Image 1 (cartoon, rainbow, N blue to C red):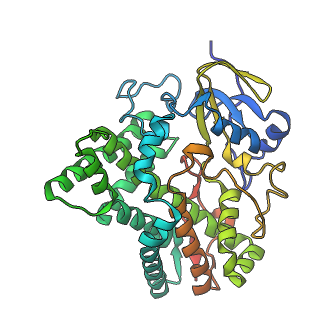
Image 2 (cartoon, rainbow, N blue to C red):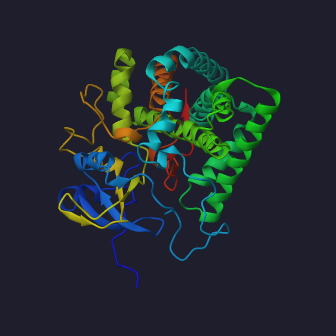
Image 3 (cartoon, helix red, strand yellow):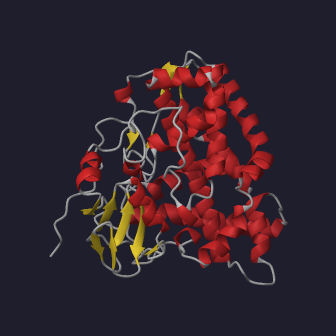
Length: 402
């Protein structure tokens, strides 16, 4: 008999705010059992400190089983995921060993040295193209999508000409409204693509980009990295490296165009850009269905008994609007001083690419406002189409007039 549980809140009364039901859950049931949109059940955590504790608790494993299939649905692939879990679904010490292979390329210093000049150039080129084009345009297609795609291609050594293919595959894989079979087909496209690209780089001896560096590790004598692991890392970095930042960039501009006080503040004080980006990350928190962990043992957590094998999901948009952690959390405040937020997760699994996302946002937002001070929405705010089914919340199209 199927357990009767309330559904995880998903309906948004306003496009830039999380579901209103999170307010009640934070106050009355901060750790509660729900049924998730994909049909699975588990615990939903809606407060900031408790959410942080989930990510830091070694009794809660990132090595979670496949749980993105609605009950009763059978995938054409049977029960197997399209590829083996990457290091983001590993616990220590395995997670740390693989993450250390990549960490040096993602530090603030490395991003400033190796990627910032490239980001500066392509952002200015796209602003020039906007200035030379129609007065009304889709910001997503003009900048929010191409800039992150170009950056991740530059980092990995992936041909930008292939962007339509890998972006469409990413959309299919991350759309929770799709069947598991449809999502798996997107994942397989990415696997096949990275597999062919790795083979081509080996054949030609190409040395450009992070993929080539990982190939050198895989081909080394110690056998530390298998080809399956190499391909899994390439897939993860390619889809996560462009989709997340594209979503955040589009939402950030939508926020600035609908919050004139905050827009004016950033335009007048570009020195606040770093604080503004952190506040937008907190305020928007694009990971709309949260991040999960699985209990390795029976445990007591925040007054609830969680059984071994239970799924525990942190509702990050709710946690980042917790009034216990942030004053007036539903208002973006570019003067806010905060020690941290959960937009990139927390603990050892905190998002590897966060410094690249910060660099892109910190470059685009002040330059966009300075270049086009009269930028405005070309349609009413309530007519901006939102992606309510993707793993990352986003605007599908943002028509603006310069």
